[in-house]
Length: 352
Image (cartoon, rainbow, N blue to C red; front, side):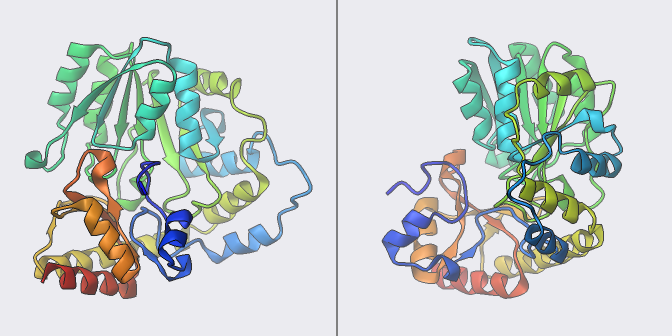
C-alpha cells in the first residue's frame, strides 16, 4: 500500500484498518497542528450552529475579525475552505496553459499539483541539505531573472524545513518582478513569536495565504484566507464556489479569534516543548535540522521504513518526507510533553 499517495500527513483510516490499529490509539506527529487543540469557545460555538440554514456567503463576521487581527481592510480578505482551495482558485484565475511556475522547494505539493492542472510548466528551485534547506534572496533573484516566471510559490516559513525568509528581503524581491504573481504561503507564521507578514499594500503582484487550521487546530473544518489587493480579491470572488465556507467553520473561526489569550498560551507551551524535545533527541543521537517553527526535519536512513516501523510497533505516526524529495528525512511536529516523551522513548529504542 502506498501510504503517501496523496502526499500529505495525517491519519490514514484505510491504512490503520488494514494494520488493525485503532486510530484513537495513534499519536500523530505527522501534521503541523497545534497539539493543544481548539479553545473551549470553539466547541461551544459548534454546538450552537444552525445546520438547517445556509451559511453567510461572504463570511462577513469572520472577515471583520480577521481584518482587525491583521490590520487590513476586510475587502482585501477572501476566506476559503482551507488554503488548499485557495491555491486552486489562484491557479485557475491567473495561470494559462504553457505558463511557467517557479516553486521554491522542497515544499507543499499542492502548489505543483494545482499549477499542472492549469497546463502550466513547473520549474523547481530546490534548496539543499548542505545549506540547511535554506534559500537566499540572491539565489531566488537569480532564478526569477533567468526564468521570468508567470507565478512563483514561496512557503514562508517553509514546510517541511521550518526555515523563514526575512519579510523585508522577500518584499524587495517581489517588487523587482512586477509581471510575476508571487504567492507567499504564511500558514505557519503564527508559530514564530514576533514574525512579520510579507504583506504590503504597494505590492500589487502579491497574494498572501493564511491558514486557520494550524494554530487554531481546526483542520477538520477547513478554513483559510487570502490577503491581497482589492482588485485581486474581487476577481477571485467571481470564481469561488457558492457557500464555500460552511457555517460550522465560520462559527469556529469566529470563536477562535475571540480567544487570542488561549492561542498565545498554547503557542508558548509548544515553543517550550520543542526546546525540550530537541534536547532529548540530541541526547539519543538523532540529527535534526534547525527550524524556526514547532516542526522540524530529522535525518534517518529510510523514511518510508522508519515511518512504518514507528506506526506498527509504537502506534506513533511521523511524516515520511519522501514526497518532498527527501527520502532520508522525517518531519516531526512538537506535541505535548507526555506525547513527546513517548516519541523519544520509541526513537531511542530504534536507535539502539
